[in-house]
Amino acid sequence: MQFTKENIEELNSKLKGKSAFEIITFFINELGNDITFGTSLGIEDQVITQMILSQTSDIDIFTLDTGRLFPETYDLIDRTSRKYKRNIKAYSPKHTEVEEMVETKGINLFYESIELRKHCCQIRKLNPLKRALEEKKAWFTGLRKSQSITRIDMQIVEWDENSSMLKINPLIDWSEQQVWDYIKAKKIPYNPLHDKGYPSIGCQPCTRAIEKDEDIRAGRWWWENPDTKECGLHAK
Image (tube, rainbow, N blue to C red):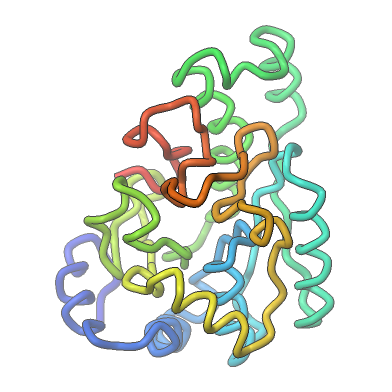
């Protein structure tokens, strides 16, 4: 079948009721290495990494190394690569863009305004993502509806306007408990910061631990309103 913007409704209908593993298997069988997976090393992405590598080693798996990740995240990249005997490719921002941004706007510009924070995300995340997705037809993500109010209307298959390709969300209907149950059952490595009050982990300066009664995304860009808390990778 066709994998275009016009076929999204057909794809979602076809995949309705399928398990995450079945969704991943379907696209691997249909697209082969024309599909890729971008991991942020969160628990959802660790589940998808395991599901992909349990059936093939031919799918590219990459991460965006912004240069400002937690040490624990870099350690998890190494532990994951060793466990599955598969290196995760890291895409970094261009040093000239980072240097110009820091020189003209400061090292911690993201605290100053939403516009400057998004500018930093553009340099450190979105621009490297474009290189990672070159010549691909689709990519997997670990998005879940219950993660954020900005994601409640997302479906299994979406059209990524930024990259003009399909975006596949195999865990879109999973609960956080389902993710943790799978992590523990399959003995999947995860970031120890999750055990210290960090349910969502991004760049170190933009992530904090949360309190028990806070939303799971409350620790990301905590100085902003909930409806702006996206870096642009998954904006509708």
